[in-house]
Image 1 (cartoon, rainbow, N blue to C red):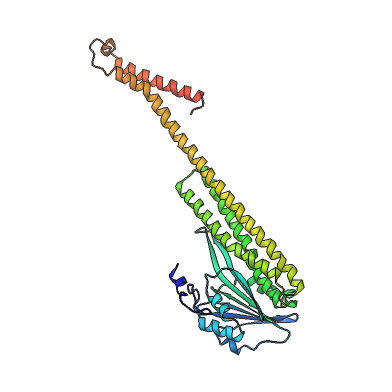
Image 2 (image 1 turned 30 degrees about the vertical axis):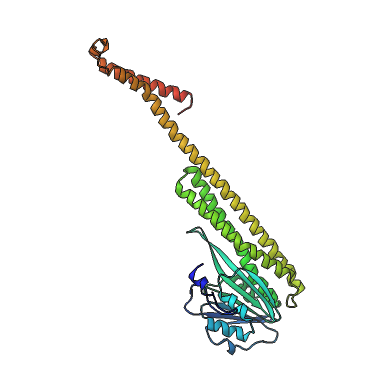
Length: 352
């Protein structure tokens, strides 16, 4: 258990303790309100959340909170929106697994935003929490980059259909962005596997085997994150909470299809990596056999040469060839001819 995970040991339930690494200088709150007629956005920039008037009639309010280290501000937000203490605890506990909890005043969804680092070939996760009530949505993330920029673009589009929907559909759209992002992760993994396959076929190096093993571990890690996310999507679809409109449920059902497709893709790539490991062993065996073959041929050629050198290296005075004027050069020529004949024979038999 890491030191930050252990910080929670002995604490009472509902203790708001940030367990991650600080990724932003200060928490920024991107506020966006909209309805069918238009939208308005502004930066709240760490001001007291209680100064923001809510609810507003016929408006959906979205508070995009970026940064989790300021637990006092998180608690202030929780007080303003009547969030349960256990929910606040989960928001700042980045080690919490994906889940969905229903409350009287809204639905709390916790997921992992998953990306793939092409440099280290590693799965990266970011802790993301979403809570939506009757006319508002809260989203929390660790870093300051715009994770939901696609949703923001849809809201600010002149012909936006999203602005005609309520908070439940906005929450669905935020979850959908993270699920669809998994397809990009799979595409990147597939490219890495294809590159590894080309490298294996060229030459099976130990470094490639280590990369294959590392990628297999990352696929296992990815699957461990996806399984609870699938449970979240199932619960989201099956929920009969009054905030979820029937028309939104049809869209939520697609989340199940998408997450199942992604999990199937991960299983496929895991099988491909096992197959790639077998290919690596086969290529390595072929390379080893090639080396052994070359060494065997060299040894075979030198066996008769060693025999000739041994025979004429004996110190017997009654060996007539020892007194031949050009005996040394004749022996070398005979060795050369014998070596060439053996090489020709090996090539004819396609051993070379």
